[in-house]
Amino acid sequence: MTVMIFSSLTRISDLETAGFATMPVPRDHWEGSDYVIGEVTGTPSSLYQIETPRGRMLHVMPGDHIVGAFGNRAATLEGAGCWSDIKNDKMHALTSAGLFGTFTSVSLMMPRPLSLKYVGHVVRGNRKISMSDFAIQSKASRFHTPTILLVGTSMSAGKTTTGRLIVHELASLGLSVVGAKLTGAGRYRDILSFRDAGASAIYDFVDAGMPSTVVKEDYFRSAIRPLLSTISRATPDFLVAEAGASPLEPYNGAAAIDELGDNIRCTVLCASDPYAVVGVQQAFGLKPDFVTGPATNTSAAIALVKKLSGVDGANSMDPDSLPAIRAMLRQTLGVDFSKAA
Image 1 (spheres, one colour):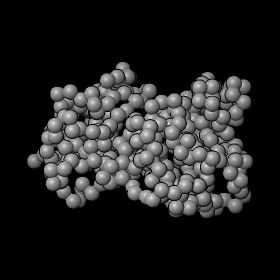
Image 2 (cartoon, rainbow, N blue to C red):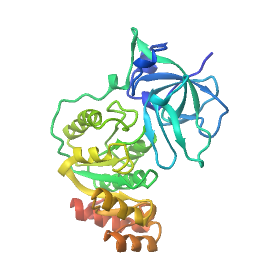
Image 3 (tube, one colour):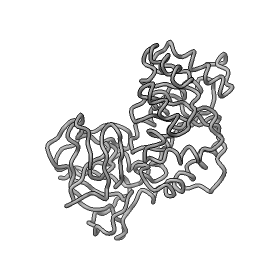
Image 4 (cartoon, rainbow, N blue to C red):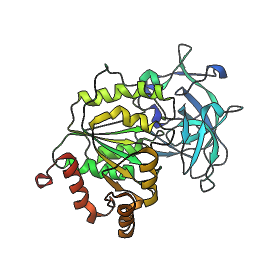
């Protein structure tokens, strides 16, 4: 019996419970965000794991079938790939969330990626099913939620760690906080950590029907607006929004920032090193209120950030930095931590 595994990209759908058929679809009818079935092939490595709709990691074996979605990835530290580069029905899991495509460039530091064979599309009534069929729906309305924006100089720059801390600190004041990841490549556990930290609700671009945000800008904007409208109508006190990697990478980070508009009350730059802070400032014209991430791992690094950029920083992983981070939030948001629970 073939084992069917549902990846976390299916969490917005009813595929686990409502049933579907599998049917090969001609190549010229393939599109990004299509739900498809891939059969695990090759020799397993440490990357032969799939994230489930509950956020749990599950080891997979050759012969298993995985329900995922076509999409693109452009990770600076791990790998880049695209669904349109799939050849001879051979593909990879570009992320453990079930983002399917073919790696065209992979870091030599990475283990062998999870290899797959295209089995067919998820279909109902001879119609292929896409993530967009389950995307969040909302009437257009102006976004007006006060927002703390998290921007990184690259992937793995500490955005999720910092966001989790900020959510926790604001929630400890009894404030209603929504956590959102607006750009990136599908992975559920990052945004789940915001909920664990006290967010009243969490969202990401998957809720908007996108497996990743490496898409055309106009498509990204039209997909993300209903999500922002949904958040705004819930009237939280604050939105803690992570904008993927760097605004200069092809994840539509700049478009996400533009959609948030003048609702941004505080911008935290999570940087890989002090010089990357200057790089983002000069290349994107971004003036953060604060710097965290590996660029603030030591007092020497924090001093260099200040010298190069004129911006204060603190290590969000260091408990001794909490007073500095609270002071930053108090200054930019006007919150009073003397009332913390």
